[in-house]
Image 1 (cartoon, one colour):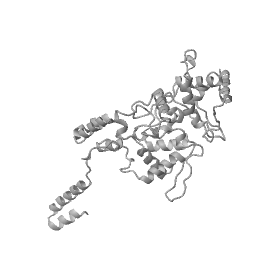
Image 2 (cartoon, one colour):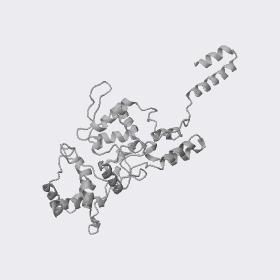
Image 3 (tube, helix red, strand yellow):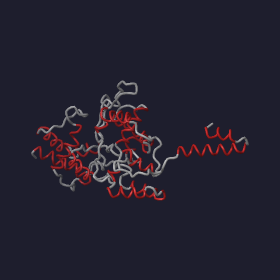
Length: 353
């Protein structure tokens, strides 16, 4: 029984008055728990987008915490970068995977020049070259918590029904990646919570999606509740809510009309894509160096199979009994046919052909 009700019972003896006292108690409790829809102070450029959306009344996943725990964020970051962290008892946790770190396939920084369009590999390569970031098969974790679906489109072809729970639940996407994609294990609850916290810590901030003038516009409208639904739609229009994934075959039917490759862009792809894994102490058994021997071997492979590079990019390489590591493939959104030809042009240039 709450203090309000006790007081009212002492003041009034009549049973109907007790009913009113109870209602008054509930009203008082609700007022104590009431939270402003939008804070009186202006949003700053570094405000998290998901928190702004929550203030405006957007429905967010129930498992998103009210406040980020710094310890969880650090543990999640450790797992993403190093595959393990300190467990709640202070000891070292087991590796999620014996073969891969999350960063072998995913960046943790912004990788798109236009956050509303994450399906343009040419623009993303320009951005990667300018900022010297890897050009990888998986989409970046930066902003992953702002998406609304995961393992989209053709990923069902690879993982079947496993994508169904992961499609609409970031926690399940984390688990699918840990177990299947990294050839590892399912995360414990505290590990899942930590990774989710890290993802939220690198989610979009207002300054990532809005200009200074647009943030000012948001602040001018945020205290008008009638405008909140439109503000939510407006904010979400500045970034993609999913990462499309089209699995495509090598363009066999267009063999005679493929674009001429650009060796300069091929060099960038080789360094920012191939060599991120195929390097000394990398996650691949095969090391791709810059020697003429390596490039001449690539060129001889074209004589054996004109499509070998396209097959590698579009199909990847699967593990086999006793050897779980594999090479993930590139979807159409993550590498274009033109970029495969750029790689080929660079290989042939370096081979002297």
